[in-house]
Image (cartoon, rainbow, N blue to C red; front, side, top):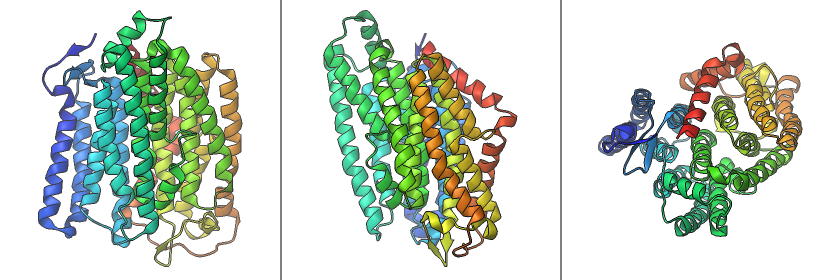
Length: 483
């Protein structure tokens, strides 16, 4: 039973992060552009301190801001992933931004504000707080997507993301207005009570509202057919920003989608399950087949992320605690193997300039064996080849689908995984069996090297001791259904 706490205790990590972001903004203003690296490291420290505060929160479910903000094991688990993804993205950006002459103190501060919005999204317990968190995240992401102001591609990426993001916000608000019109409340708990009371006689307007909200959130997680922005934004944005887009915002949006469908609309599982199944199937098919024809590595990773969201939605489609646990395990593993892949992509420099063609990876193992090994581990894991971490991620979501009787969905997931393995293994073939086209620049930089090593080792050795992550994901899923 949730206890309404009038103090700000459950939101102290967010309060601290907001104050830290504003303090670092002022530090950058007074110290000038030369403070970019200092502000970046301090931002990483602020994220670490936020994680420390978060780890000290009580496991008991608590509410604040009039019931609009909730903290529970599910929120803590997902926020930890968001904080880790944001910190890794800032570290990966350090050398890149300095080489590309876009190192400005505003960059990490925008990451902090985006992360603050993501944490609010994860803890949203009301349609209003949901929208506020989503927009705080989105406004920061629009800016960082176009952060390279002298690049037409980066400016185009930011503009496309802004226009389509505004469209998704409109869908979300319209869906929320429909829900409020029929339910008379925006609180998740209030909506859930009304859904239970009127089970079997659900107004059609509520169903339409759920559809609009699901469509808006599908845009945020880049699930097909709402994925049209993803390849262009991934290609046009600076590579570290693309890496950030592919992990932290995606994890936050998935957690929001899970909470919205499970908590207020849990009694409507029969209605929204069909929507999630459709999103999962289309995402897996587009992610599997469209990536085959890509020649740009960042566009390939965009379609890969669409496919992976499809696999995560397989677990959500199960509509039970086991399925949610599978989603949490999958997104945790996805963070590490995706950061490893983008870390290797950031090493693709020839004669001082970034290269992004897949063919540029030819013979990489002969010139930079460690980078090639890290990318190969990531590719094998994304393909779902055992005993790497990606295999276990897919195993848990497919088992959840089978236990829920969604046999066709599980079969489609396995078949699309086989299709996707083609373009993952093609990259490995290029690196190890083709002749080098040109030598990549060395060295890669210590911060990026540490990120590559850490994420690759986790992906490679996850099978040795997977119990802590799986146990934590199980507790988080149980907390969501206990609420």
